[in-house]
Image (cartoon, rainbow, N blue to C red):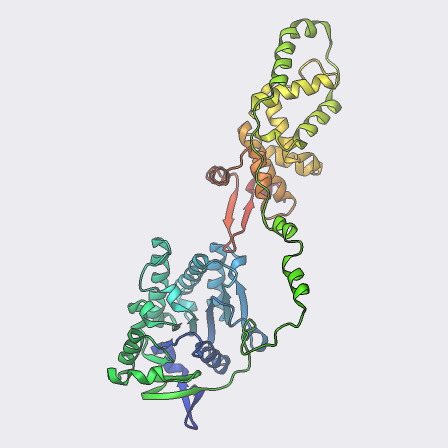
Length: 479
């Protein structure tokens, strides 16, 4: 008995798709925006949901509603790093789960990288997990472009390799590619050519009509037939559909696109003055919440502090010989805390900071320098990082982990470590930049690269633009 589904009808006669044949021969769907491609794919997926594993690459969030009526798992790619997506894809193949890879939360190039990573991991699964699965890629011209466009060349090579593997070599691994595109001319020819089944919807450009007619085995003068198709009607051909071209009206579906807005809606009836207020009131406050404040400029050294320090250093021999050391720990903590609270302090040169530290100590009655320059830099780094707010045991582990780090790098490392101890994925970028004494995002990125090369941290970039940073030394000692 064949595993067939009804995709629609031709003048009242049902049009069937043989799912077993489709797994061996693949499918290409083409049609302009609004021709009904998503509706067709949804019908195909709903009707075959109980027969075969389904994996959908969904750049626009059109198919996440399948999870409401079927057993599909929605995977938000923006929440995972590259390594996590690869591991997840391997589990999808192992456990034969039907999933929707939702990409709508990512920028276009990140969508392409995430999809390519996922598809390559599906393709590279161990032989014992080569179970049959339909792999649906909507908006395939994004992932298999015929020309480089504006994406980086390495990204284009990555995604073309993934799509070519799916369509050319996926069959032996149980992967049956179903690709849908708005324009055949924008889809790489080596990807389109591997499909043996076609469902061609309405299209208006001559180059796309001619290419669609060629794939359907029509004469070029018959290409006008494709232009005249109504929305929701497709011309089908292929071993899994029909041996001759058939015009099929796609049947109804159970689920819908949650984001879709179709038809006309009544306009709001608010008075003009009220609508003006809704649009323009409190714009400045909202803009302020959307735009982060600029980083503080690095101030010039304070000439008054320098002159006082020179005088202090001149008088120091007499003073140090006349005084005896006293316990200054409480006053020293107050001085360091006050300096760390100054928003401009971390951006000053170390020498200027040290002179300011000495002047503040004198104001607290400490005339004998309690710290030399090297000790001060480390104590100040700890104050800026806020390690005094960490419980004692965790603080000891953190300071031990940073014991061998250079003075000028200790502050940002302690900020990262404190965030890890507090259970945060990563510290705030502004907090990290301030501890490093810079307003340059590039310097912060290079610092993280240096820490990672030294084995001090592990950085995982999440496709949604977030970053997760862990500190192995803290995890090793935390058990």
